[in-house]
Length: 136
Image 1 (tube, rainbow, N blue to C red):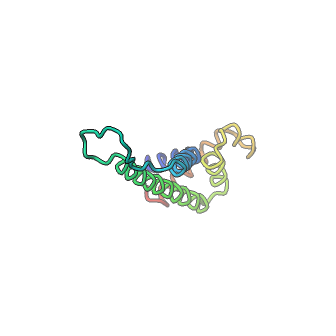
Image 2 (cartoon, rainbow, N blue to C red):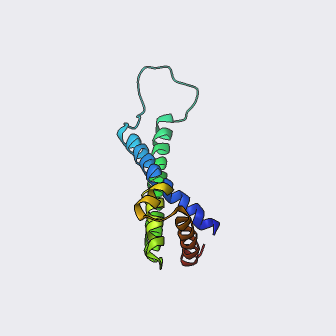
Image 3 (cartoon, rainbow, N blue to C red):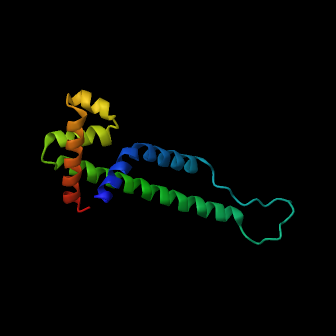
């Protein structure tokens, strides 16, 4: 049960995280990769190619970010599809409005015209059903 709650909390924060990842990818892709300079500058004592190291680190970071972005999207779609499998339509709407659309409890209660107690029961019921559906 705690696994599904953790996944739902991640889903609620997912749009912000995806935007952060996208911005970091854009930043890394827009900055030119440093090249080694062959000028008459004093040579350091190290034989390391720092420009190459920075390039490799940038490429590795881009790969990590793209993988994380894909994993976030996969998890988001899996949970959205699981919401569709909920037996009670109210449970589906409560989960969508709260976790996907990011509405507050007051906004969800107002838009569905139900009490907060009904929302809490619906959410609890939905989480239990999701735990069974997703095995967590």
